[in-house]
Length: 359
Image (cartoon, rainbow, N blue to C red; front, side, top):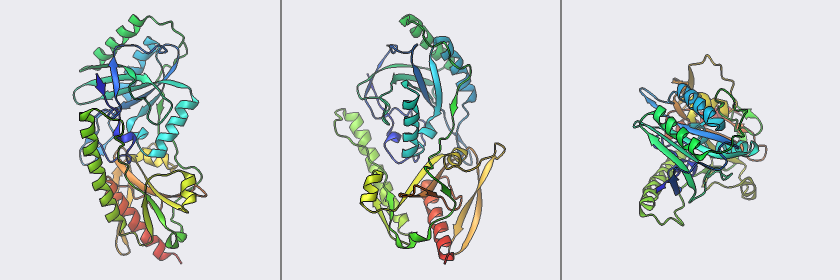
């Protein structure tokens, strides 16, 4: 039986906020086969919970869920050393790379996907392939689902006991280790925009379509076709919004640092998307535990601004500029917003006002 893996792993981070599991475009085989190294090697859990919808779309609560799951894993001998919110893993391409580097450095052998939907819970455990893809095509995975979390964990435990593996994981932490946002700032965070942008071409990464090569399943091909149509529309919208950028820019496909230097792109426009608090952490802002919301600066052209308060847990997008030689990050004003389109407009407007004031 086939299931699929996340489009979010390949596309532009964060512009899909649905409640579907993240395994959505890599073919795997669902089985009840317990991984051979379950009780002797380390695992990482990537979890997804429903967002809360009101005036803002906010990250869902997960503390109680993870506490119960981890207690069950301890009794099963599953050494889950990290718990990572899907929102944070898919926050940006370089954020995903940072988490993969961490997983490899800590010798993670299995990835567990724990998904809470409106209909119940799903559990999928697969060998970690060491790459941003997480799981290889065609892998056999240990998969279960149930309407109730207690029943799901009970059934997982039964299969683990039936496998009768020798237990080597004796030093499992009593509480879940929740991974907060890892920093994506390679050097220094600068809350301004460099004046040299007036005469330097800004490289702007396009949204990334899915590669359908090697896909034979018609249903998956149709999903990819629809997804890529949406990507094409978003790239058109991206180009339309960037037309208001006052200086030279060029839309590019994502490329390595070496290729950026070879093509003489000194500055690169990137974005990140997650809960507002996590985005600030990933960009090295100092965030007080007592802050319940953050004030975004929204430009009102030509030279005015207004402020907009967005809750700490609301899902936001933030654009920033990376200097590709120094690897410093320029964020300008805090102008994150709830759609990527508005966030980009905020960034362009604030940058324009700042650089017109500078001598």
